[in-house]
Image (cartoon, rainbow, N blue to C red; front, side, top):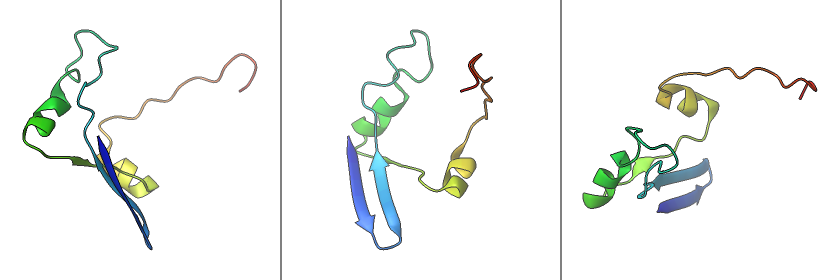
Amino acid sequence: MQVVEFAPTGPKARTALTYGNSSRPGSPDITDQLRLYERRELRKVAFTPEEVAAAGVRTVQLPALADGS
């Protein structure tokens, strides 16, 4: 579920991924957002680089592919 406002200062959105991260069995993220949905709450979506950096839990740097892409 997602609600988006296209404001003059940029997009503002709130969301909840009610089914969680079901592709990773055993992940603590499988049901974490279901609790938000049960409480009828949504979490803020980070859009700007500053918002993403502030909301980040960890940074993972992926290696380049052999073809350089």
